[in-house]
Length: 220
Image 1 (cartoon, rainbow, N blue to C red):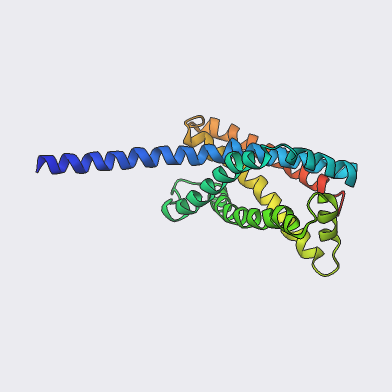
Image 2 (cartoon, rainbow, N blue to C red; image 1 turned 120 degrees about the vertical axis):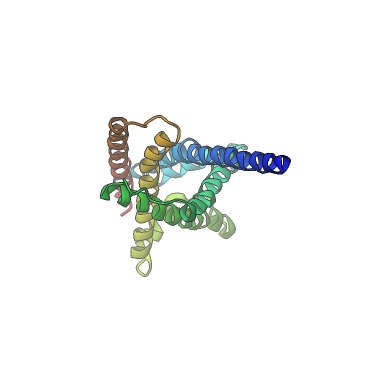
C-alpha cells in the first residue's frame, strides 16, 4: 500500500511540476517571441506612409534573408500556436477568482475572447498576406495588395473592420498579457505592484493602438 501511495504521489507531483512549467512557458512565449514580433510588425506598418516603393522594399528586405522563413517558423509561429492552443485549454480549466473586481472580471474575459479572435485573425492574415499572394504569383507587392483590399467596393469595409479588430485585439492581448505574465512569474504580487503593472499595460495599449490607427490611415 505504501509503495502504491508513493507511486501515486510521485505521479501527481510530476504532473503538477509539468503543468507549472508549461504555464510559465505559455506566459513567456506570449510576451517575448510573439509579443516582441508584434511590436516589430506594427513598427514596419508605419512605412505605409512612405509609399508603395519604400514599404515593399522594407517588407521584402526582411524576407530576402535565407533564414527569414525558418526564423518565423521557429521563433514566431511555433511559440504562437503553442501559446494559442494551450491558452484555449486554459479557458476551460481556469476559473475566475471571486475576489476579482468588475474591471478585473472584464479584463479576464476580454483576454480569453481576444486570444481566440487573434488566433483566427492570424491564420487568415498569414493566408491573405503571405501564402495567398505567393500562390497567386503576386508576392512582393505588399502595399498594393493591402491597399486594394481596403479599397475594394464590395468587401473593403469588411476587410477594414476585420483587419482593425484583429490588430487591436492582438495589441490588447499583448498589453493586458503583461499583467498575467508579471503575476505568473512573481514580479507583481502585491496590490500596489499590480496597479503599477496595469497602468503600464494600459499606456502600452494606448501607444500601440495609436500607432496602428496612424499606420492604417495611410491607406484608409
